[in-house]
Image 1 (cartoon, rainbow, N blue to C red):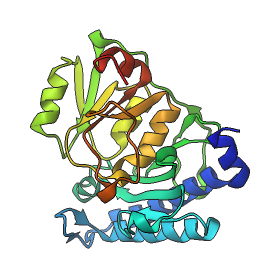
Image 2: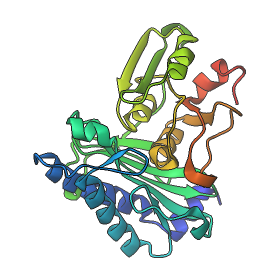
Image 3: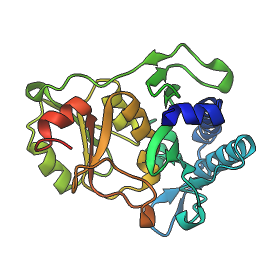
Image 4: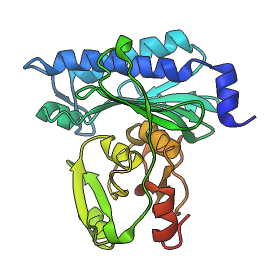
Length: 278
């Protein structure tokens, strides 16, 4: 019995409820988005937090705690020390990824819910409230996209998604719209991509998972909740996220929850490009 079969046996509705939590939170986020006052505050790490972040965090927490009371939740906005998460399974939540884009009203923000199993991102839901796009990795191990999902009762037909075949002569790279660094630009220059775009939040992973982009390098600070859900979706689409220092899969539950520099790509792309690949 593999890890998905074990999870399905014990928690058969887990992906459905993760999707419902993300969509419900997204509906509430859009309620704040339509207002003029977002209630912006600055946290100790100098990052912004809004009323939408807090509302989304509560909605997700309430749903997941009710449905799965024995699975701990680690969230950006209601952070608990990982030392208190005793066990091999927990939810990892970013209730509003791309807060800066939310404040700018670009629409490029997401709700991210991951299930971490044995330090690996195995299940994930990424919901884009502005467009109604819903990405998730199901219990069959594959990843899917639904469009036009604007509430829990409006789920649409799902489409299986996958990374495209690597072509170093026609490479498309995606980078952060708000957090690019000189190190990232230098890394991208090594590949001389035909196309380079920017996107907010975890949408960058989605572009690779859908076969639109090939490579997303991040040589800058991120936290585990920034990557967990989209990492799982990318894995289900035939890709992964690798640490640049070891070329091993990015793991979760690290002290401090900071991520090392990483690159996200399709498995095919990794094998032919990362100095021999992981």
